[in-house]
Image (cartoon, rainbow, N blue to C red; front, side):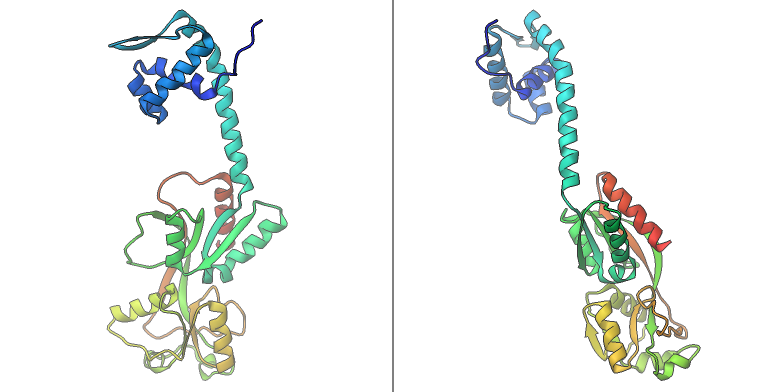
Length: 299
């Protein structure tokens, strides 16, 4: 049996099938995402291997010759197998790469890092975590630099069209009072005292800071200048304890029993935590599993 000069390329066989199904080389080239000259070159290479014409060409389009029909019928199952192998390899590549998670600083301290510790112990998918402010988290997901995000939602803010948000938990920014401070023994804080007292606050780009200042502006109120501005919730808690000064943080971050959280008369600063996904597309199985874990953690 004579041997072929080379083995036919999968793309050449796919080009033959798509050309026959489409009826014209122009439509086939569009379906394949290549130029018509590139498609013609593929088909000519396949016909050279066959030693005969596989497609009849006419002003009306193309149709299979008897030899082309035989090859078309044999190539169909082969291409179906090749597509399954391509899907399998793509899945392996996705699983080999770490899942990229972007999470706000407060969500990391409240529940994200605890969830990732459990996932690691159970030898789940590798997760690469980036901690940033909520707005940065949404930007990372929208730009494709993160597969999933966990952030705080800004009530009434203009949404980012590149992402979609799914609420997973309600939250509130509260006044955390360290032990020994006079407010720690109060049932509630008078609004006037709250407004004139310098406190430890997050940096201006944080959602916690925005939530408080947005509500105060809405009511026409002004707070005293901050006692100090810090970049993360953990640093804010340290500063508040060391200086014995109240701090404005998520109630989910101030979970230790030594923090008093008396309400402020006439004021509340609600917000919510959201899962952040790209605006289009379906999450992978690993992303969906991590989303379920995160939901459970805040339930």
